[in-house]
Length: 113
Length: 111
Figure 1 (cartoon, chains in turn cyan, purple):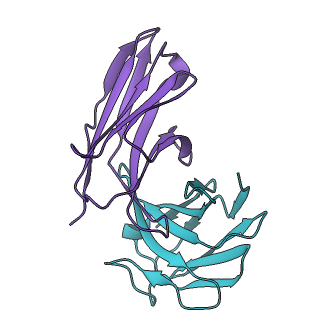
Figure 2 (spheres, helix red, strand yellow):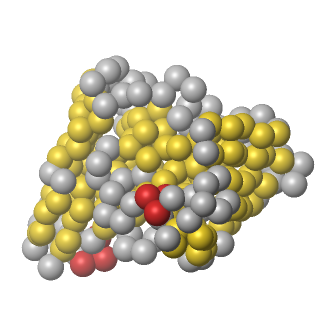
């Protein structure tokens, strides 16, 4: 399976600031996804990061709040903008393998104070 | 609204016994079904996937799928304390492989 490196692994941020999370994969992958896991909750898909085009956002998530870049087939970033305490979550990058299995990076634990 | 439902638990299982986890889903177009294990503070780890009706075995794990009943289950045989974790059921409906997750079932294996 692909090896997914995500950084930072954790951060504590002030409200009103922005944080960019990076996701690097050791092989070229077509599909990359960003998920959020709020405390005590399951995973919710934020968006699909498409190489060479705009990301596709799920209901309830907007580009102004979660801008995503996908400059090539091995890398993506997610920015959490104008943060509030409600954004405190684990953010996870995942990739789809050939058999459509999704594998996850180690996640970024974000705390907004 | 597509939904994936799981009992939240905790499911307490004696060491060496079989843990049985259940998951139901609402979207009849779902094509792929996954079980992830998540230890506290860690990211989800894929342990099983199944696409066709019936059983699929991998070591101590068996996944069972019944598309007519929209039901997928996971059996963990000879449960070990290291199996204590939250188990997430995930369902994929389209060719992009986007997954919808259940809330997870917490499993506690007691020595």
